[in-house]
Length: 433
Image 1 (cartoon, one colour):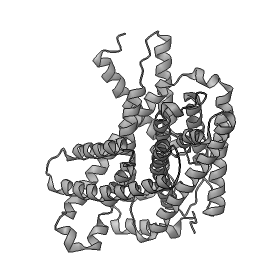
Image 2 (cartoon, rainbow, N blue to C red):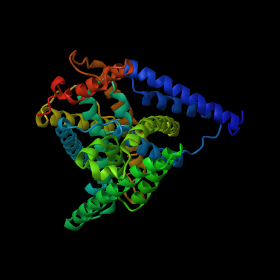
Image 3 (spheres, rainbow, N blue to C red):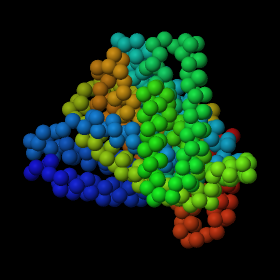
Image 4 (spheres, rainbow, N blue to C red):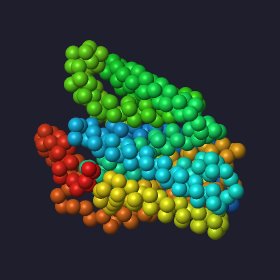
């Protein structure tokens, strides 16, 4: 069989997409993470290539490309699904602080584990620890749809913030050989620059959406976002902030109307913007789904099971997972003072962990912390998330995302749906106080 035959490639890709939709349906019905099924497909394909004596192609470069595109699309998808209201300000602050504290604490704890088991400096150990400390929004966001609205939004915000803060922290430690006042002042200067770029880019893209009448504008928007993101990354700027900012402002453009109705209406056609927003959400979700599918299959395909034969992978990997759970438990239980189920288990490692791990500079890589450890941590954290979702029974009084979607499908008045959304703090028992 000639695997370079274009018809074989089209057939395989199309079949993969069909299976991915089936996996997504299975995930929603059983809480079994679809990412594990996609990884399984990739592993199965590699086994087929090996047993058929077909040369296994190198896919690391493809993995990086699809990972970057997937990251942008998934963060945008998550941001376009978040509504900012007065009652959610506290939730946003809580999830941001949660992501920051847990990221830093987990990074230091894992760095200590790596430092103990290797002869590397603590800084190099910390660089290698950061990728394992980032919660994957690419896996979290599609996995929490059956939770209450408050829990779903908290975990969506937290995982998205974890992605962004994780990238910022990773860039900070690989760029600065010495952590001092100058390093921190440069970092905060970059944050101010990022905010300015985000505001200017968001306003320009919003104007573009309403001004251009072409039916092909959405992929132009995606291309512009990727251009800005790539340029920023080459300058070591965490331009993922821009993606999040753009999605949040676009989905909550009513706040601009309330802020100064006459002023902003001169620049933006808000009724048209709301119509286009619905199409943008749909296209973004479809593209994110496709890219996520390809990425995790490629990662599964790239993995060699022989790497799991190393006992240090199991020892260090288990210690990393235990550290992650311990810190998450302590923070949720004693700082946020909220219910710890299922939140303690919903901290999967995935796309960002893979991207950052493969981005560690050659001089700061640790030889015995290879792809086997990466695969082990990703698999175990996803299994833990599955267990958490399966044992969580919820509360009969909770308003779930699926119930809101069902209400919309049954043409329930949007005012009622919005009221449920706005008042969810009083119906959910997450208890952020």
